[in-house]
Length: 624
Image (cartoon, rainbow, N blue to C red; front, top):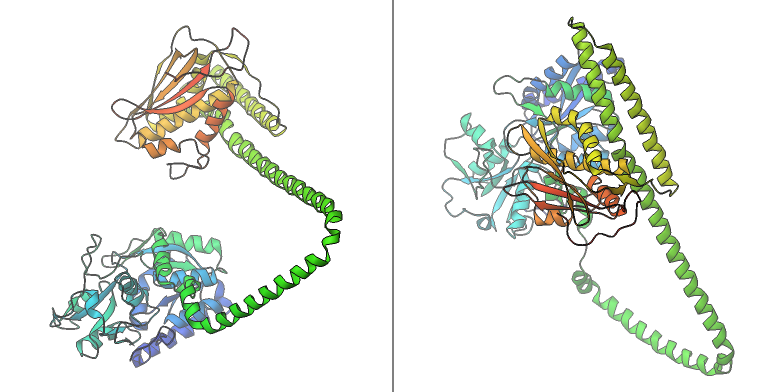
């Protein structure tokens, strides 16, 4: 029969075998027992039984045993449901966890706040395969199915219908309008195969790899069915007609304990499945499922099905025409009344003119004041965010890095002492003094941040840029050794003094060193080399930090100093933006150029101080 979108409903597995019904009843009894006083030791997992209750209990048995092994003393109950039954179980809190297809998971995530803790690693594609009989040579493409009858397990089955629906829509076919009919056969999904083989329908939609599995099990003659419009999917040997989506997730309900969910996830991720049994991996990204639902305007995106202006006009043009006529009559009446009012009030126009001008002037002033207040409030919020979040995080890295390095040295000497090597107590005392000094330095950084909040200017003094670079390199030695980075230095002689704040300049150099190290590590095998040079140029001093990474594209260079822009997976995008603002406050320049061969050179230029006096100098020309 041909059904509309609204008429389509999941069959709920009507006509299941007596054995499947008995297994389903046993699962329900076990789920009811899980609500008894033994609830604390019982874990209920509801699963979508797309191949029947008995198959689901057998398929998810290893998963239940893996959770029981990871949570000693617990009992795991697998409860099979159809699509609607699993919806009710989640809404009523009848289960603790759910295992379902990715489309159903997205719907439950939006409706009930469930959250995935692991994703099945079955190696089988979550996709749709549109199958026809081998002798149907007239059915080769999706367009050939227009006007044909197609069997589906149900409109809510993701691999069994929705994934294929998206491909139909991409081909310009509406399965609810352009097909002769959609026959809903319900679970198990093998009923779709029976409907195609028995000629009740022209085609059927299956989950990917189910055709190959049933053929291998001898459910029908080899080669009796084939897949329409197969797509190339390197990740699977099975023929599919749609895009491939993330595998089934296991998700916890909102009321399920987070601590218990963590233990369940750990048990699943450490589970070593036997041959032929799928395992579990970390939760995958289900954004492709959201995109599919958004394209189809179903599930969480049902609200996107809105009436267009053309449809609204075609449906209510008589009402709109009457409204237009009434509006025109009201406009004519309003114009007539306005003319009469103007005639009656002409005598008051002169007296009211000054008052109107005064009111208008006051209104403009109030609007301007309100706009200025909004701009000042916005600027104040951005200033506090930049100074407190960005400045504190990056400036504290310097003394904390030094403390970590000295602490590593103390730990190394103590380990040598435990092995019988004499301890140099003088070195330990010196290291603890240095740790104290760096802790005091961190306190100074915090005091400086408080000064920033109070809008106090940092203290600038004449500095030897070689000394600033040397101290920054000392701070970076420990992280460099741990990362396999070799630091090369080429300090220039007779470098002119520059005017600046020592801690802020060290912060900039350390940030450039860390970025260079990250860029180098991403390319090839170590050890990696980062080179730091200083030189006199353009009436000032320059620092060049060079790496041998992949380099930067023109787009990245254009946005390099934008706040919150980053190319690092875990980056915040504040480092170079903050460095750029610090360099500008020092009347300097910071820019990136390509290094010969490969890699990037970050160049920092600062104007020279006039003797030992710091002056505000505006740089001219390009740096070295």
